Image (cartoon, one colour):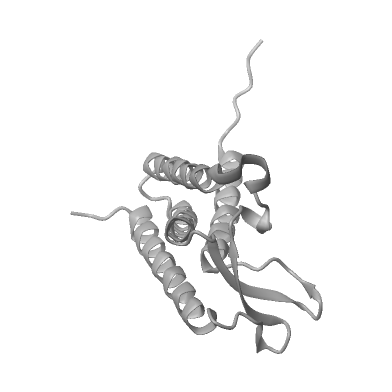
Length: 172
């Protein structure tokens, strides 16, 4: 039985990203849970800073708008997005290597954050803190990086395929 090209990239990347994300979050929570102050990794440019994000991307919090329903709404939304991405994967041609990579990263990251959302009432564990001095970027995790890179690759793949498709002009 021949494994489709997309599956050779999608499934390993999904599993590697999910396991790496869960492992790094557990390590950071175990190491920093009692004392969550920032710890420099590369001077002040990259630091470990443990935070729990109860909201969505970039720390946007839904609780002021939907109250106690924020967590269930986010869990259902993540499940829906994973469903959309898996459906997109199923519709891909069997040789879509780059799309398989992109979707593997995106789904693996989404599963990592979904797992956190379910197991931690405080929210998703974020710990990678990048910036210069007091000018910091958002604190994120391995799953977020996978989702971002996967999303950029997927958008690029879709745009590239749209450009390569011949456009038919209506005849008059």
